[in-house]
Length: 209
Image 1: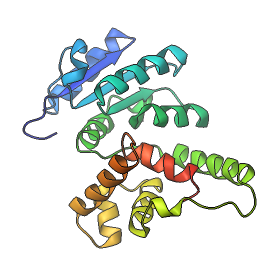
Image 2 (image 1 turned 135 degrees about the vertical axis):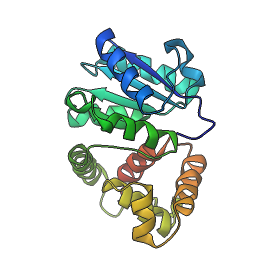
Image 3 (image 1 turned 180 degrees about the vertical axis):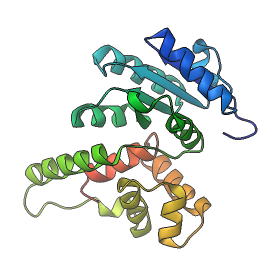
Image 4 (image 1 turned 60 degrees about the vertical axis):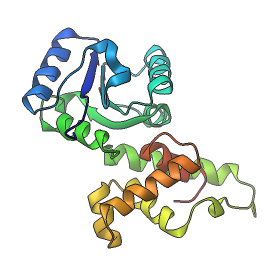
């Protein structure tokens, strides 16, 4: 979190889980705002047992209203649920079994600076699912939307799809972290995407990675 960060909000179905996460975040120096101040927070942490329709609808509504990055703490997600989560604007996914450790703190700090933290297994399965669907749906000889993204932009998104964070992408491409962030920012603004996870999903759907 930055020195000027407003902090995080934590929403959980279970008050005990919420209290534990709030305590853990505050111990790590991350201020926690009242639940109703989602619109002021730098990051929202959403803890759910099941990623069901009501949760999805509420998440879409809040993200659409505030644009706040969201860290989802949930039981094991299916590939379909993961794709829905990314489409809703989820920036990071943390298994509930790991929610009491430093992983949530890492996820919140990453989300606050525009990074993501997504389970490599789910990312890999989602990519394979989307690539298969694209191949089946795209007519032979159909044109590609590659012109919408530069070679560098595609390289950045491909590395992010492989699970690399901003620092790792910058190291791999021999550039600065600021350059990587500027690339991602340019993609999201130009294509009206919510965050880096949404940008990666867009690139996969278009067959760019």
